[in-house]
Image (cartoon, rainbow, N blue to C red):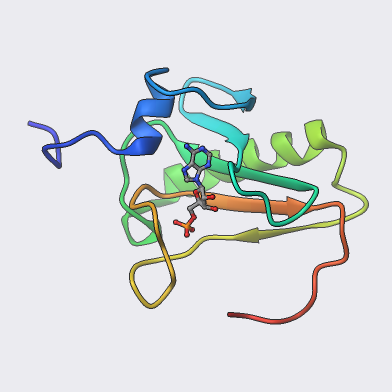
Length: 115
Ligand code: AMP
C-alpha cells in the first residue's frame, strides 16, 4: 500500500501527468524548474520515490541525491559562480509541497536573510 491515498503534485510530475520543465533526470531523481522562480535559476530537485521531507532521508538517499544535485549544478553552469540549496521541512520550515525537495537558486547575488 502506498504511504498516502492521493498522489501529490510532484508525484504527478514524476509520472508525467502534469507538465514540468525538466532540467535533468536519472533513475531515482528529477530536477525541474520552479513554476514561481525566486531567482534567474530556480530548480527543484526531488527523489522520484515519495519521501515527505528531509526527516525521511537516509544516508543512501542523501549520498545519491547529493551527487545528482552536483550534476544539476554542473549542467546549469553555476558551480563556480555559486548557488544556494534550501530544503524546507514541515509547517515551521515553510514547506508547501509535502514531497522532499531541494531548491537550487542561482544567477543573482542572494542575500543572507532567512525567512
Ligand atoms: P516549498 O515551499 O519548499 O514546499 O516549495 C514548493 C515549491 O514548489 C514552490 O517554490 C512552488 O513555486 C513550487 N511548485 C509548486 N507547484 C509546482 C509545479 N507544478 N511545477 C514547478 N514548481 C512548482
